[in-house]
Length: 266
Image: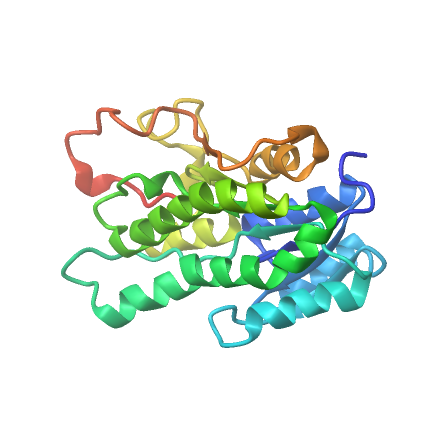
């Protein structure tokens, strides 16, 4: 198994991409710390994975001391820490008119600053194991969609951090830092978000080819499959890399003429 005996924190793993990554990690032999805000959902994930394979830690990572407590939970449960997956994030629509200082700060706190602080808290343990960090970004990090301003800024910052720490921590601590940027993923929250925007119950079954050339959008399990390479030893010394996971080129692609109909992507 690719992750045998590894201990991995996966933030935001009570649902969506994080849940899929946690499930795949255990299938590959790892022990995981399931993290999120939804205790009931988290208990369901732990029950699915088995209590010998997973523990649950409920916390808001933007609060002072929360990253340190999450690392402590991993050490107390499993005695070491091999990897951190920074997946937890707020996905929220905004533009320059609707984004004020407090709103932008809130997204930065969760999407960019909390991952930094978790890496910092985990670093002594990751150094001891020659471990790794995998940041889950977004294709919106490069510029973003018109109504994803604050979110895109936060993911751009995360990507720069990955490049920077992927160099410095690899050289100084033997810890690799990489990132994957998912495109549009069919998570549970994305299904509900689109329904709240007025789309039909089964909106994802009939998407224009401009958004989904394959006839569908990505599944969380497909992102999880890609994550395994970066968490496993088979990725070797590779560090500071960002890989986009989308079914079409995101940069330079001709958008539809009516951009008001563009759905929000992860």
